[in-house]
Image 1 (cartoon, rainbow, N blue to C red):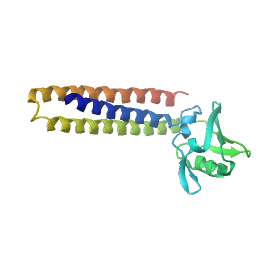
Image 2 (image 1 turned 90 degrees about the vertical axis):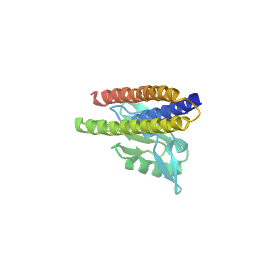
Image 3 (image 1 turned 120 degrees about the vertical axis):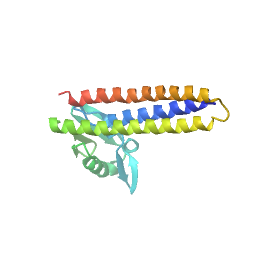
Length: 184
């Protein structure tokens, strides 16, 4: 029973860490990366649609991306969605076949803004992990009548260790992303 609680807790904490890493990937560094547009929703015939379903995205060089729409009729919508995307600052241009997205050089002030955004996402992930810990503790407390209190106390200590391990993973990912953002 305790093992079932830990399997669930670890699974949910792993998902929180992965969500944080995906969130970090969408924050722009000095280099162009197709993952910047990963979560972009395009208004396609009145329906929000992920960009990945409408076009392919490739690196052209270090500061530009090429978006190739599958449907040329969606080009203006894709271009508008990229232009309106917060924290990107890109100015897309299209030649009728592809959309070229040139990313401006990051200033030091802008880099520090991005670091704040990444720190906020890391804190969100930590909160999610703590919420999973709280739910796991509640599940353990519900087992108190079936299992001895000593077992529950040991399991709670192990739960704290697991929580710390996952929070450390978020902190490590944050340090890497912060270093990447501040690298000129």
